[in-house]
Length: 127
Image 1 (tube, rainbow, N blue to C red):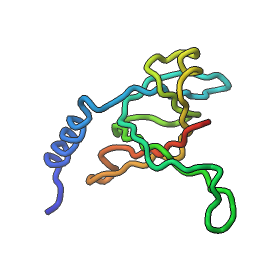
Image 2: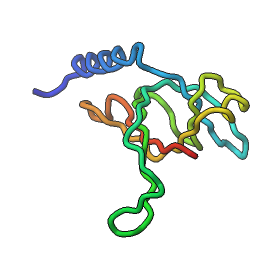
Image 3: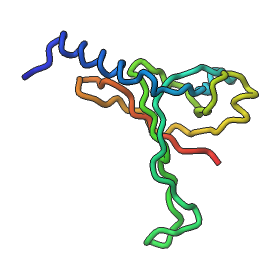
Image 4: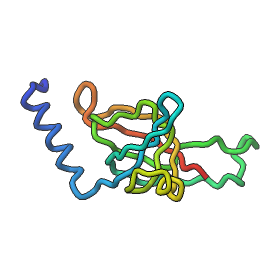
């Protein structure tokens, strides 16, 4: 059964309602024309597996850096120009300097609808 416009809007409303009470604020650090700016974004962040950088893999090489956190963000969130994300609630230079920072690996729209219902963002913690 194809999804008509009414069903697609219903799906988007349900997805957005599921974010209630689960979202956290993150600060996106954006580089634009040589100067940094800060903007708050909302999303659900959760850890994935953590690699021990001192343990070699089966080929004898150091492990490749992989994503260690997953961020589920609403569909309208803009990640263009984002250098990294900081886990704090205040969009200021001092708060960002003291917070945990995450490198953005990829942001992909996923979901039932063409064009997605939310963004799946893979993050790597900067140490």
